[in-house]
Each structure stands twice: as structure tokens, then as C-alpha cells.
Image (cartoon, rainbow, N blue to C red; front, side):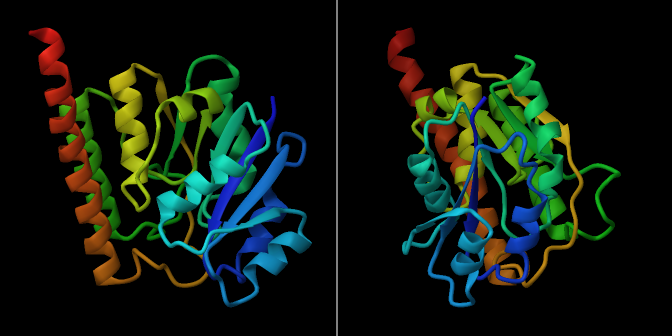
Length: 235
């Protein structure tokens, strides 16, 4: 299995070397760091650690992930991982196991378990995740507990989903489109730790509210879009 790891970054110089050093080399075929105009030397550090750096000047988490997917070199599986060391890259085998065993098309690392560090995920992010995943379960019938960024998927499945969200709506979009298309999504417990450096989203009120609105509105928007698309076929 060829495994490409995509890491979006923006000013993660304090953490990126630890992230790259912890990736299991025996199962990682390539690492693509998608950097969004960092000014602290992040891309240079990543390149020095052996990662292939792709520069994406346009902002947006989803955009960085899509750019990384397009740049990946013929992988069988694509992994998405944040560059702040809050998730542990050494747990990659846990994330890949259900796919390698033929039990899943997409895996999501759930941070809402006892093996996460206390306080690593602020209460408002826990609440937002619970609300969003409850809405996804209600509207789409797929059981997930977290919209965690540490996730993996079979390349052919990811590309068939035609992902298009360029902001934080990209995280629920993947799950929703999998549910609609009938692909298998499996959650696995992963540990979660306080990030290195300041959060660009969860660390600010504006960022938290903006991300929450983006995610919740997308879940509802895709639901009504899907209902409109299904009605003519049923008629």
C-alpha cells in the first residue's frame, strides 16, 4: 500500500519537526506539506526533514487538503494530519488498520476518548463536535462522534466524492458524501494533546464561531440539496 500523508500548515515552525519525526517511516510512502504563506520558516524546516513542500497561497483548510490530494503521487491511501502535534503521528497504524483489513473506506480518528490529555480539546470544541455529529447522525444515519482532522481514506473513494469545500466545511463534507454514497466510515480512538503554538481557530472566539457556523450550515445545506436531487428520481 502506498500511503501519502497530507499536512496543511501555516506558521507551525514550533511543531512541524516533531510531527514529521514521529511518522512511522515503514508505512509512510511520502509526506506532502501544504504550506499557506508561513512566515516563520515552516516550509524550510519541513523540506529539511524530507517532506515535499507544496505552496498554496490561498487560505482555507479544505483548500490545503484538496491541494495536497492533487499533489499526491499515486497513493492507495491518503492520510490527513494537522501540523501542530495535537494528534500523534505515531498512531497512524491505528488509523490505517480498518482500511488495510477491508473494513472501511474512510477512517476518522476520534479525540473524544479517555486516552486524550485532559483539556486538550476545549469545552466549546467538544460541544460543537457533539452538536455537529448528532446532526449528521440524525439527518444522514451515519454514526460518528467527532469531526477530527486525523483521518484517512482510500484514494479512489476520496476522489469519487468530488470534495469541494475550501474551508472547515471540508471535514463534515467528506463524512456526509460518504454517507450518501454508501461508503463505509469507521471511527477509531486516537489520543489528543494540547497543540504546540496558538490555535488559529479554537483559540479565538471569532475563529470558533466562524468554524461552527460554517460546519452546521453546511450539514443542513447538503441535506436539503440531497433531498431536492432525490425527489425527481423518485417521482
